[in-house]
Amino acid sequence: MELTKKIGFMQGRLSPLVEGKIQAFPWDTWREEFAVAQTLGLKVMEWTLDQDRLHQNPLMTSDGHIEIRRLCQTHSICIPSLTGDCFMQAPFWKVSEHEAATRKEDFIAIARACSRIGIDNIVVPLVDGGRLENEQQEAALLAFMLAHREMFKKMGLRIVFESDFGPIELARFISRLPEDTFGVNYDIGNSAALGYKPSEEFECYGERIVNVHLKDRSLGGPSVPLGAGDADFSAVFRLLSELAYSGYIIMQTARATDDNHAGALSKYIAQIDTWAEGL
Image: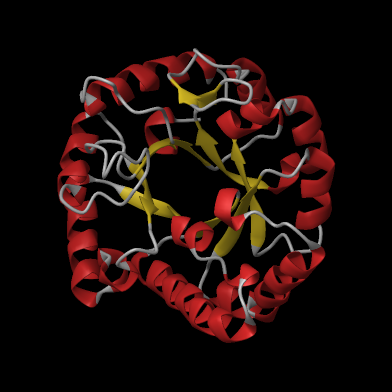
């Protein structure tokens, strides 16, 4: 793997925290992040999209598309994926049919916007507020996805699910969706926090992994600096290598405590380089 092409960062990780949140769209500094990323040698960004001011986000406006394309060209950055925190914040599979209609329209609008600026993967977090809690919620989610499969396919999109399901349960879930349009986002830190073993996860659904979020967490705890938690990065990178994984690895890392966000990512890049030798 050519690390400079495959290692990316989650939008916002090069900006100050927004209202104390570890992850949120950086309204005041989103443009500046492109230039800072370039100085670090980063060429890949994963966009973040919140429910708050959803339709004002640059991703969702024509003027925003022009500016995003210009910044990508100027700073040699590509945006292959989007994390839709908005889906976790306002999941259509957890509300009445009437309320769900608007949220489904938003999902389609987001898909079209992604397609227009070249985003290939839309990460749907089935965790926290988006967690699937019963069969009815799962059925509602699957019905929508399958009904729009051909549309997503024509747009060149893949819908990628991040879940806190155990390995067997996640394998069962993703098997209900065709692999040409749907896949799994593997979050290294979240799996460590839940006590899952990478070998079991990869055995169950490794072939469906198309995007990776890289962070560290302690068992049952929050995000911590890389190497300070319980994530077994050596094992994960070995398993990715065995799969001949060719997707992106996105740093969704713990935030800098001294506000030196670029310095933190620079340090993390060096650590990842060590773990990824041979991948």
